[in-house]
Image (cartoon, rainbow over all chains, first blue to last red; front, side):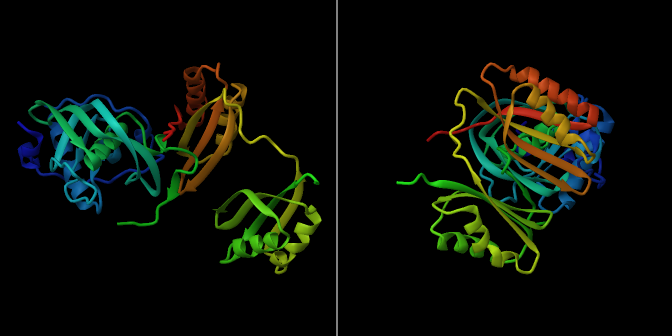
Length: 181
Length: 176
């Protein structure tokens, strides 16, 4: 299937809204172990990530470690964001990895787990990612660009134990957050 | 012609609109030229450092900026400094260091100690404390023959002892 055809209804379980943890919570600074897409706990977690993302203003992506669970999966939905070009709607990927990343551009990022800071981070604007769907475990390749590419790299970084702070361009690339949604 | 002298000026204290306008007006009136300057707010305190050049003494600068200090809430210093070659050592390689974790004393000293032992020179540093999260981002020049991976590993080990995450990565520069 195409990732754009996936919806959270495919998970078959209602999502619960979880509490988002903030740095310096240790779970955010350690690599998350691989997630078994067929594990019912992972399917539930996938639904929970989508539900938590939906109720969080301005949130375009949420990794499992951000709700305190060390597991390699995340939810993304950039379809309502003005910087988006290509969008594949709402989706969750397990064990996602970057296959190809080109055309880096600098952009300012924030994070629900670092609520008081933003930072300028260079990210690829053309991106190919491979990952597995929760539930079926079907392996999919997602090709995207612009803001969805940035969101995917930000979430894959979370799964590797990195925050945007670990990627900022320099000493003058971290800023107090000006706008809270 | 007399050699042009350099004067380092610092202004620090209570923030209000107009400090930079007042300070630079005082320097301009002396015919001084601003070379490099930096200004930020540190926990809400105004903090500015600059180097200016011209044929004036530090005492002249101190006198010209005296009105800034009149209410006792700003401190001004002026001192002659020698000319330094600001171009840096081009054989060194630039990296960016990030440290983040729970706030505790000694984070910066432990991490920068590792860098110093490796011959690394910090060229810029910003640290921020928000809630319990402490963040430091430094720009570091490493000697051309330094093993950056080994330095990164030593930094991570030092960070692990303090319970903070440390990343060291090459600084990306796009020359257009």
